Length: 199
Image (cartoon, rainbow, N blue to C red; front, top):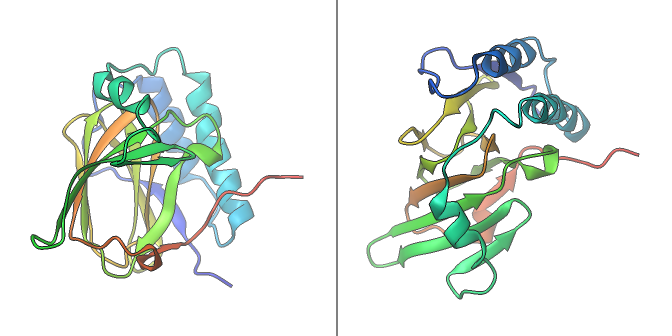
């Protein structure tokens, strides 16, 4: 059995003022009353609840995202990109000698649990995420299994030390700048939970 995770809204960080108040209130109430999660099915249900609320407020959840629109069309057609289910990765710099990587995460608005990044952790990679445009919920777990969800908008950051579990729920189309040490080994990335399709 996996560790039990409890999801809670982070009340220590300011919520972007442009997010609809009722959406924030409803999401906060849902997250803070959610059941603990210890398997992929329960995690899928949790994400489904959040994306259902997001869909309810879809017309109010908007953002100016020129970088997203410029880059999304090039994902998979440019040698410095990697296509993913949630959008893709666009490398700005990858230097082994400097032990430094910069890349854009070009993230489509999540309309269901399969549009969420993570929930994952790294063995060696140290990273910092910064929202360049759009809005998201950053997920970050502590050693006790409490996962803080932080409403994030342009300029907001999240710093991650291994092996902290983490993920991103995109509330709008979102562009995130990720900076990290040079750790590109696929074996460094492990998933805590992954969404599953229900029968």
